[in-house]
Length: 82
Image: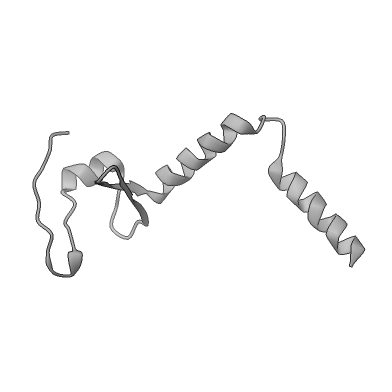
């Protein structure tokens, strides 16, 4: 995709060009994550942000380990102590 110029409107609103929305898989009503990094504003879909987070966690947690199962077991142990 090529660069496209746009303007910031009243209230800080900006129109994301249709081609950019299509390329990012964004649709009307989608939640997005906005991050300022190295002076740039980066906008990504919530799906993309979650996928990136999951990829980071996968680097440190083996596939056969279930953090959910561990959390449930911890909660059950806590409730037994109450």
